[in-house]
Length: 206
Image 1 (tube, rainbow, N blue to C red):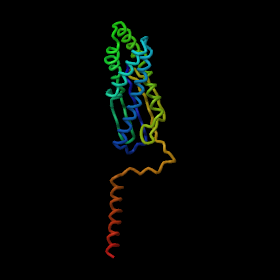
Image 2: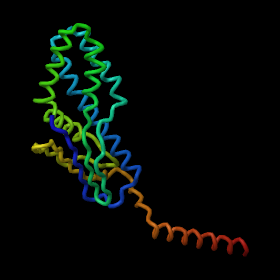
Image 3: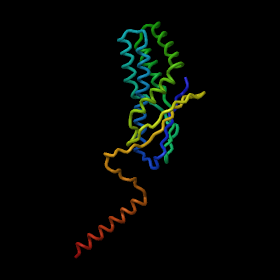
Image 4: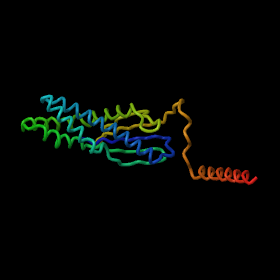
């Protein structure tokens, strides 16, 4: 199973705040986790097991997923935004340890499901998950008016790369956004406030 890398690029993030980065990472994490759960749900419900067992496996996986990282950060560069994330595989470990081994009492069932999982990971998980992640990212904002402009999936020898190009879309109904503070703009604002304060003092003295 080749690792999946997410490569994000936004050409116009000249000043990207830590808050914006956190918001972006949280929304990406949500999209990736939903894609992982969706793929594993499809696997679970394709199994030749009683429905109650499949629901129990699904519930255990979903509950445990909150504590499993959706991805690991390899690189984030500010200026323009360039970010590389590696999609985690922890949910598969949860499926094995917490769902398959604890829900299925019959050894033959366990063996059959584990064999199916090995084939699923080798033949389907990587490319199918990459496509689902791309689809999930395409339909949501990833920051303040930041949306996906294009998604391209590249299969390389050692990894699958999901290239995601981002753009900022302005909404005409929104009020103008305050420009980002800079040392120069704050210095000018201080000077303006001092001038106003000085004028008010002189008016009061008169």
